[in-house]
Image 1 (tube, rainbow, N blue to C red):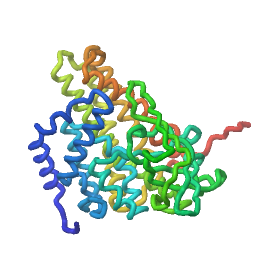
Image 2: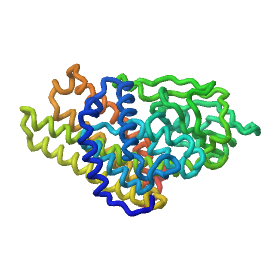
Image 3: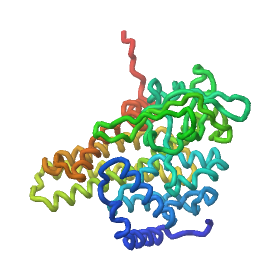
Image 4: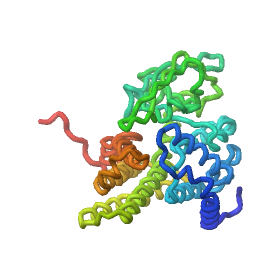
Length: 389
């Protein structure tokens, strides 16, 4: 699609379509009682968004998109969240891994991305390992090129979002020696129903099983599932992580802003009076979200212009973890015991959100690591002398 588009007009059309479908989509606005229901709601909303063309903005036509700017898609998703809908779980991984697959494996993307964009498939991302969390270059999962057009994969991934139920996983593995560090990595698209794949759900503190350990034992993967080149997995991973700081952070920002809106609505409808202290807490939360939105918007514009973002995105990650936790900490303080401790689905939803937000300072890059990157690569501060004198 090459013709100029009016973003405001598209957003108006989306708002009208969403309003017209409000009765049809009403069940999808209600809090889901469990993870399985949430994923079913996610798929239904993905189907509706795709069929209307809304989430196809910014994706190439070859993979089922309609072209145009990905910024349009981001604004549509923000509008969706602020209208009271849960941004589809399918997108939380797809918006991170999808652009890298398009860039580094266009033929593979044309074959497999359309089903994921429509929500007919759920993808996951296989990076973290028991001995390689923040240090990806230390990962040990092996992908051995057998010389017959296939790789043999053996190893383990952990903390894999939707790993227990996803259809495919974008897997970072080692094709070289461990001593090669980042130079000996490969990225593959692996079917999670393939022989040799075992999945073990990990229960969160809330009781939900949204994460999993994934084990690979002599799993055969075709070389046509290669994303990028053998030995170039690190470069693909770094491209992929840009979108974790961009589109993913934007979606989390929109979701956190929707949580704040919900909190304000509950407080306005309830008997509890707003004190100066609670007003200050809510104001601080709003400012944190505003800062996150501004930073993430800047990163999104750079990515839309095909620019490589640098270490400054560590600031985005720090703002994201702070804002997300602050919104839900504020909610825990402001909501009364009945709203938090009852057996209702709504109360359980607030509790689940709070529990999940505890990981915001770890997933996607631990807070301490981001502080180190800011100090070392942005502020150019001298390294601490750990040996003393």
